[in-house]
Length: 396
Image 1 (cartoon, rainbow, N blue to C red):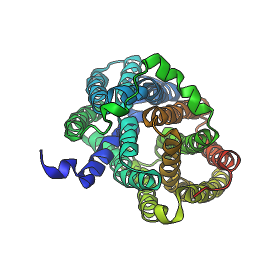
Image 2: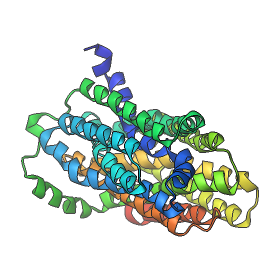
Image 3: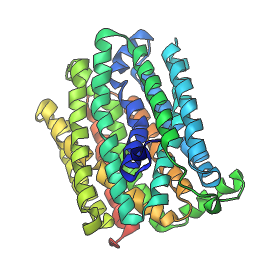
């Protein structure tokens, strides 16, 4: 095996590539949502349930499969999950009803859910707190390119083919991810694995809930992620249908926010060891909440049109990676030797919130940007409140 694959830089690259499974699976088919709704004669709420089903599957999968990595090691569950993801992606491409797509998306997410959980646990196996925050930031620097590229790919695919081709692209990604997983070493030695049965390990989640700082980190991150999920669910209809943006150009409006994430991720990775993860987390939550209030004002008033929504959105979403990487590194540091379970619970709560948020966007849909921007503002402000109440003074 080539040495670069198993070296530190190679591991970071593979971690980033594997972690792209969630944003790629979600974002690549966003430009196709209006087409999918028309092709299968569904309404907006039914169409968005394909997105909610993915979030539910991703959350449930992390909750159930995450603890297995603490007992059986990181690599075997990772490979098994990717195989299931590939099979479900094929089923999505071959589906002929909205119900079949919903079920297949759930299974696809269930299999893929183990990937980010294990990647985060592997990082925790290898690095200490502030270093793990730095590595997770670098990891997000790689994965943040997926939301930039994915809608662009999806939009261009739709110029020549239909929505089914998008799921075949995901099949190809799954195969490449499987080969990348085989290249990784096992990071959890047999002596460090938990011998408890899976049921006991699942009940161990309650121990994590008893730790105030773990709950604070995870709540802060989960609520801020609601901003992203509301944007993902609402933006195709807001930009394409409300503002009349062509599907092939939607990816540019979507991707500019991801460029902001990439920039903030790079900055965070450069300064987090010196400034401290807790301090940067507080600053990001504060600025993000302020930006969301501006978004609510411009969105409700209609001031600035597309720019009035896109500019404050850029500020809110650009800070997501700083919040996420610093919060999850804090949560895993608190979880200590239960990193797999800690990462799984955090991921499950995030994607559970995503399912609720995306469903709420569909239920509240009124043909305007109001439901999307209201939920984004609520998520950012609530994240700041959770940070202040549950985490208190930064401990860096």
